[in-house]
Length: 408
Ligand code: CTP
Image 1 (cartoon, helix red, strand yellow):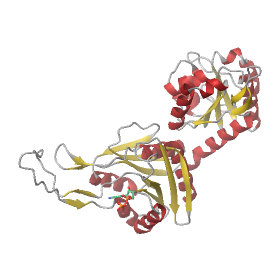
Image 2 (cartoon, rainbow, N blue to C red):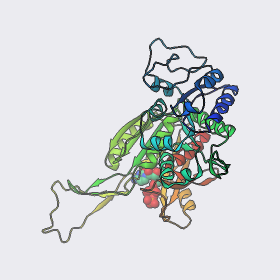
Image 3 (cartoon, rainbow, N blue to C red):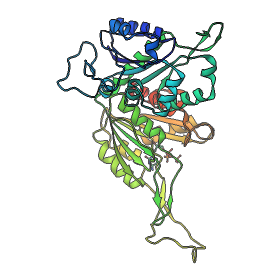
Image 4 (cartoon, rainbow, N blue to C red):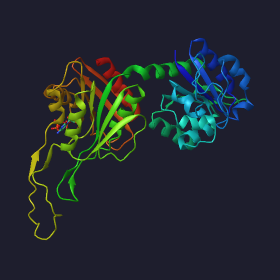
């Protein structure tokens, strides 16, 4: 049984959302519905209320009689803010049908209705089932909005092809059928809890080794993969600590973030958090060498013609942690390899570092990795290889966590 919020926006397919609510309720889920004003021109709130046994949420400024709970639950004593409370305890939020207008608002983060406001506040898995005319679906604006949502980890289902609402038109834009939407909701909601009670330590970003007070040796890692892993693990119920090396972006969800700069700082923070963790996801690009001596003064051009920069090796943080592991901990490394038999090289690292899995990508492929939104990875474990898996970083993060959950 899951708590499911269904957001109904304006479109002829709103009548199919009634069937979705019915099927979800019959399957034993606790269902709440929020509708936009435009949706209520197509179907009535009374229909959803009869099916779900709960009032429909339409206005952010009205109190929810159920105080954010789902059918069958006890009411809290206090009266919370409705659009926050109803997503706080949701296991999944599905917007079906999602009109072109609503998709645009969700992509832009606009909050002008109960549906859009609660969508922005929702950290549970979010599913969007588009429904619109084929030309509206294919327009570059809609495609860009869909890509934005997917990049942020929202599951946007593919609309079906066939007869469209306007007479005589045929094309892509039909809302996916209710059983397909329900299956997507159920898999997203079930996934959510599989790391509940687990402590996950993630390292992300790229370390910087100071040469002098203004210069450093760094690398191109943006930290996006590690951040996506931290967010996905939190969504799936884990207690997450993120050691972030020079990560510019923010992190959504309940993640305990520790910012560090150098490999030595990253090592110290990781060692402190490692003892208590069940899973280590070592996604940071850690410098292998650092200047042997950091200059206290900024190096000047004059007299620096023959600037020999001596480097010394840093500690292998991951191998060091593997050396002090307890039973039951799962250690995952990450390797960006350049072409050739990159999977075999990654397997060599797995053996050398004494870890359970290594996630490898081929950085000779310019369309993936580093700053790009998409990635393609293979997970190498002691038992075998999984992938290649290609997708947005949030999708890849979930695929990696599926493997981790299996190893646990
Ligand atoms: N790693 C680490 N400490 C380092 C270097 C790397 O903990 N000083 C970790 C990375 O976070 C990653 C894994 O080791 O999870 C593999 O990183 P990679 O740089 O590919 O490994 P290296 O052993 O440094 O191999 P290479 O010589 O190919 O750089």
